[in-house]
Length: 260
Image 1 (cartoon, helix red, strand yellow):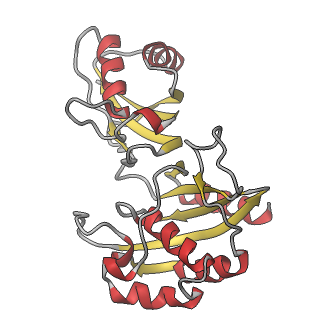
Image 2 (cartoon, one colour):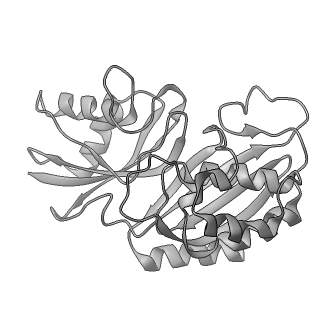
Protein backbone atom coordinates (compact mmCIF):
# COMPACT_ATOMS: atom_id res chain seq x y z
CA UNK A 1 0.00 0.00 0.00
CA UNK A 2 1.18 3.51 -0.83
CA UNK A 3 0.16 6.45 1.39
CA UNK A 4 -0.45 9.79 -0.28
CA UNK A 5 -0.96 13.29 1.09
CA UNK A 6 -3.43 15.36 -0.93
CA UNK A 7 -3.77 19.15 -0.72
CA UNK A 8 -6.89 20.54 -2.34
CA UNK A 9 -9.16 23.55 -2.72
CA UNK A 10 -12.94 23.47 -3.05
CA UNK A 11 -16.05 25.57 -3.28
CA UNK A 12 -18.31 24.18 -0.56
CA UNK A 13 -21.53 25.74 -1.88
CA UNK A 14 -23.03 22.57 -3.33
CA UNK A 15 -21.90 20.21 -0.58
CA UNK A 16 -23.22 19.20 2.85
CA UNK A 17 -19.77 19.64 4.34
CA UNK A 18 -16.52 17.71 4.03
CA UNK A 19 -17.41 14.55 5.97
CA UNK A 20 -19.19 11.79 4.10
CA UNK A 21 -22.91 11.43 4.87
CA UNK A 22 -25.58 9.16 3.40
CA UNK A 23 -27.66 10.45 0.48
CA UNK A 24 -26.10 13.93 0.28
CA UNK A 25 -23.10 15.26 -1.68
CA UNK A 26 -19.93 15.79 0.36
CA UNK A 27 -16.31 16.59 -0.45
CA UNK A 28 -15.09 13.34 1.11
CA UNK A 29 -17.71 11.38 -0.80
CA UNK A 30 -16.65 12.86 -4.15
CA UNK A 31 -12.98 12.16 -3.45
CA UNK A 32 -13.63 8.57 -2.40
CA UNK A 33 -15.70 7.94 -5.53
CA UNK A 34 -12.90 9.39 -7.65
CA UNK A 35 -10.27 7.21 -5.98
CA UNK A 36 -12.46 4.12 -6.30
CA UNK A 37 -12.61 4.68 -10.05
CA UNK A 38 -8.83 5.17 -10.21
CA UNK A 39 -8.33 2.00 -8.12
CA UNK A 40 -10.52 -0.02 -10.51
CA UNK A 41 -13.34 -0.58 -8.03
CA UNK A 42 -11.41 -0.86 -4.75
CA UNK A 43 -12.85 1.41 -2.04
CA UNK A 44 -10.35 3.97 -0.74
CA UNK A 45 -10.99 5.78 2.56
CA UNK A 46 -10.00 9.46 2.77
CA UNK A 47 -8.89 11.03 6.07
CA UNK A 48 -9.13 14.83 6.26
CA UNK A 49 -7.28 17.33 8.43
CA UNK A 50 -10.55 19.03 9.32
CA UNK A 51 -14.29 18.75 8.72
CA UNK A 52 -15.65 21.89 7.11
CA UNK A 53 -19.41 22.50 7.38
CA UNK A 54 -21.95 22.84 4.58
CA UNK A 55 -21.20 25.92 2.49
CA UNK A 56 -17.69 26.38 3.90
CA UNK A 57 -14.84 26.62 1.40
CA UNK A 58 -11.19 25.59 1.47
CA UNK A 59 -8.03 26.84 -0.20
CA UNK A 60 -5.70 24.35 1.50
CA UNK A 61 -7.52 21.35 2.95
CA UNK A 62 -5.27 18.32 3.46
CA UNK A 63 -6.16 14.61 3.33
CA UNK A 64 -4.34 11.32 3.26
CA UNK A 65 -5.26 7.94 1.82
CA UNK A 66 -3.72 4.52 1.22
CA UNK A 67 -3.70 3.26 -2.36
CA UNK A 68 -3.30 -0.40 -3.38
CA UNK A 69 -0.70 0.17 -6.10
CA UNK A 70 1.94 2.73 -7.00
CA UNK A 71 1.15 5.78 -9.12
CA UNK A 72 3.58 8.68 -9.39
CA UNK A 73 2.70 11.90 -7.59
CA UNK A 74 2.11 13.72 -10.88
CA UNK A 75 0.09 10.81 -12.23
CA UNK A 76 -2.09 10.62 -9.13
CA UNK A 77 -2.73 14.37 -9.26
CA UNK A 78 -3.82 14.14 -12.90
CA UNK A 79 -6.02 11.13 -12.20
CA UNK A 80 -7.83 12.74 -9.26
CA UNK A 81 -8.34 15.97 -11.21
CA UNK A 82 -9.82 14.00 -14.09
CA UNK A 83 -12.32 12.28 -11.79
CA UNK A 84 -13.54 15.14 -9.57
CA UNK A 85 -16.05 17.91 -10.37
CA UNK A 86 -14.81 21.39 -11.25
CA UNK A 87 -15.59 22.80 -7.79
CA UNK A 88 -13.08 20.40 -6.18
CA UNK A 89 -9.50 21.06 -7.31
CA UNK A 90 -6.63 18.84 -6.11
CA UNK A 91 -3.51 21.01 -6.00
CA UNK A 92 -0.70 18.77 -4.82
CA UNK A 93 -0.07 15.06 -4.21
CA UNK A 94 2.89 13.80 -2.17
CA UNK A 95 3.98 10.30 -1.25
CA UNK A 96 4.38 10.14 2.53
CA UNK A 97 5.35 7.70 5.25
CA UNK A 98 2.71 5.18 6.26
CA UNK A 99 2.75 6.80 9.72
CA UNK A 100 1.64 10.21 8.40
CA UNK A 101 -1.88 11.27 9.45
CA UNK A 102 -3.54 14.35 7.97
CA UNK A 103 -5.46 15.13 11.14
CA UNK A 104 -3.29 13.96 14.02
CA UNK A 105 0.02 15.23 12.62
CA UNK A 106 -1.30 18.75 12.03
CA UNK A 107 0.18 21.33 14.41
CA UNK A 108 -2.12 24.18 13.40
CA UNK A 109 -4.65 25.60 10.96
CA UNK A 110 -5.50 28.96 9.46
CA UNK A 111 -9.04 30.09 8.64
CA UNK A 112 -10.40 33.31 7.18
CA UNK A 113 -13.89 34.76 7.37
CA UNK A 114 -14.83 37.35 4.73
CA UNK A 115 -17.41 40.06 5.46
CA UNK A 116 -18.86 42.33 2.76
CA UNK A 117 -20.08 45.70 4.09
CA UNK A 118 -21.58 47.29 0.98
CA UNK A 119 -25.04 48.78 1.48
CA UNK A 120 -26.53 46.63 -1.27
CA UNK A 121 -26.11 42.88 -1.61
CA UNK A 122 -23.61 41.80 -4.25
CA UNK A 123 -24.79 38.72 -6.20
CA UNK A 124 -21.19 37.89 -7.09
CA UNK A 125 -20.14 37.75 -3.44
CA UNK A 126 -23.19 36.08 -1.91
CA UNK A 127 -21.57 32.62 -1.78
CA UNK A 128 -18.15 33.76 -0.56
CA UNK A 129 -18.70 36.68 1.82
CA UNK A 130 -21.21 37.32 4.60
CA UNK A 131 -23.20 40.49 3.88
CA UNK A 132 -23.19 42.89 6.83
CA UNK A 133 -24.57 46.17 5.40
CA UNK A 134 -23.02 48.39 8.06
CA UNK A 135 -19.51 49.78 8.38
CA UNK A 136 -17.40 47.78 10.81
CA UNK A 137 -15.92 49.50 13.83
CA UNK A 138 -12.35 48.44 13.19
CA UNK A 139 -10.94 49.72 16.48
CA UNK A 140 -13.53 47.87 18.57
CA UNK A 141 -12.98 44.62 16.68
CA UNK A 142 -9.19 44.84 16.95
CA UNK A 143 -9.48 45.48 20.68
CA UNK A 144 -11.69 42.41 21.09
CA UNK A 145 -9.43 40.24 18.92
CA UNK A 146 -6.53 40.71 21.32
CA UNK A 147 -8.46 38.84 24.01
CA UNK A 148 -8.71 35.70 21.85
CA UNK A 149 -4.94 35.33 21.48
CA UNK A 150 -3.20 32.76 23.64
CA UNK A 151 -4.44 29.57 25.27
CA UNK A 152 -8.04 29.55 26.52
CA UNK A 153 -10.95 27.23 27.18
CA UNK A 154 -13.27 28.04 24.25
CA UNK A 155 -16.37 26.27 25.59
CA UNK A 156 -18.37 29.50 25.21
CA UNK A 157 -17.37 29.61 21.55
CA UNK A 158 -18.18 26.04 20.58
CA UNK A 159 -21.33 24.13 19.74
CA UNK A 160 -23.00 22.56 22.77
CA UNK A 161 -22.93 19.10 21.17
CA UNK A 162 -19.21 19.21 20.25
CA UNK A 163 -17.75 15.84 21.32
CA UNK A 164 -14.14 16.53 22.32
CA UNK A 165 -11.93 15.62 25.26
CA UNK A 166 -10.81 19.21 25.80
CA UNK A 167 -12.05 22.59 24.64
CA UNK A 168 -8.75 24.31 25.34
CA UNK A 169 -7.15 25.75 22.21
CA UNK A 170 -4.33 28.19 21.52
CA UNK A 171 -4.83 31.10 19.12
CA UNK A 172 -1.59 32.32 17.54
CA UNK A 173 -3.01 35.00 15.27
CA UNK A 174 -6.30 36.92 15.30
CA UNK A 175 -6.41 39.92 13.01
CA UNK A 176 -8.66 42.05 10.80
CA UNK A 177 -7.68 42.90 7.22
CA UNK A 178 -9.53 45.45 5.07
CA UNK A 179 -9.92 45.08 1.29
CA UNK A 180 -12.16 47.93 0.15
CA UNK A 181 -15.69 47.14 1.36
CA UNK A 182 -14.56 43.64 2.35
CA UNK A 183 -13.07 42.73 5.70
CA UNK A 184 -11.26 39.49 6.46
CA UNK A 185 -11.03 38.05 9.95
CA UNK A 186 -8.02 35.73 10.02
CA UNK A 187 -7.43 33.16 12.75
CA UNK A 188 -4.45 30.83 13.15
CA UNK A 189 -4.33 28.37 15.99
CA UNK A 190 -3.50 24.93 17.29
CA UNK A 191 -6.99 23.79 16.31
CA UNK A 192 -10.59 24.92 16.28
CA UNK A 193 -13.74 23.49 17.84
CA UNK A 194 -16.97 22.86 15.95
CA UNK A 195 -18.51 26.25 15.02
CA UNK A 196 -15.81 28.05 17.03
CA UNK A 197 -14.80 30.57 14.37
CA UNK A 198 -18.39 31.28 13.33
CA UNK A 199 -19.38 31.98 16.96
CA UNK A 200 -16.33 34.20 17.38
CA UNK A 201 -17.30 36.11 14.23
CA UNK A 202 -20.91 36.50 15.40
CA UNK A 203 -19.63 37.87 18.69
CA UNK A 204 -17.19 40.25 16.98
CA UNK A 205 -20.00 41.62 14.81
CA UNK A 206 -21.96 42.38 17.98
CA UNK A 207 -18.87 44.13 19.34
CA UNK A 208 -18.64 46.17 16.14
CA UNK A 209 -22.33 47.11 16.31
CA UNK A 210 -22.02 48.26 19.93
CA UNK A 211 -24.06 45.41 21.40
CA UNK A 212 -21.05 44.09 23.32
CA UNK A 213 -18.04 45.78 24.87
CA UNK A 214 -14.70 44.69 23.34
CA UNK A 215 -13.41 43.92 26.83
CA UNK A 216 -16.32 41.55 27.50
CA UNK A 217 -14.48 38.73 25.71
CA UNK A 218 -12.51 37.56 28.80
CA UNK A 219 -15.76 37.28 30.80
CA UNK A 220 -17.38 35.31 27.97
CA UNK A 221 -14.42 32.93 27.88
CA UNK A 222 -14.50 32.57 31.65
CA UNK A 223 -18.24 31.74 31.65
CA UNK A 224 -17.68 28.49 29.70
CA UNK A 225 -21.32 28.60 28.59
CA UNK A 226 -22.43 28.71 24.95
CA UNK A 227 -25.19 31.25 25.69
CA UNK A 228 -22.60 33.73 27.00
CA UNK A 229 -21.39 34.37 23.43
CA UNK A 230 -23.34 35.71 20.47
CA UNK A 231 -25.01 33.99 17.52
CA UNK A 232 -23.26 31.60 15.15
CA UNK A 233 -22.40 33.51 11.98
CA UNK A 234 -23.36 32.13 8.58
CA UNK A 235 -21.04 29.53 7.01
CA UNK A 236 -20.92 31.79 3.96
CA UNK A 237 -17.63 33.66 4.16
CA UNK A 238 -15.64 30.99 6.02
CA UNK A 239 -12.64 29.39 4.32
CA UNK A 240 -10.00 26.94 5.51
CA UNK A 241 -6.80 28.53 4.23
CA UNK A 242 -4.00 26.24 5.33
CA UNK A 243 -3.04 23.29 7.51
CA UNK A 244 0.39 23.36 9.15
CA UNK A 245 2.53 20.28 9.72
CA UNK A 246 5.82 21.93 10.70
CA UNK A 247 5.96 24.56 13.42
CA UNK A 248 8.74 26.31 11.48
CA UNK A 249 6.43 26.69 8.46
CA UNK A 250 3.70 28.11 10.65
CA UNK A 251 6.03 30.60 12.33
CA UNK A 252 7.33 31.69 8.91
CA UNK A 253 3.77 32.21 7.67
CA UNK A 254 2.85 34.29 10.72
CA UNK A 255 6.00 36.39 10.29
CA UNK A 256 5.16 37.04 6.63
CA UNK A 257 1.61 38.07 7.56
CA UNK A 258 2.88 40.45 10.24
CA UNK A 259 5.38 42.01 7.82
CA UNK A 260 2.69 42.34 5.15
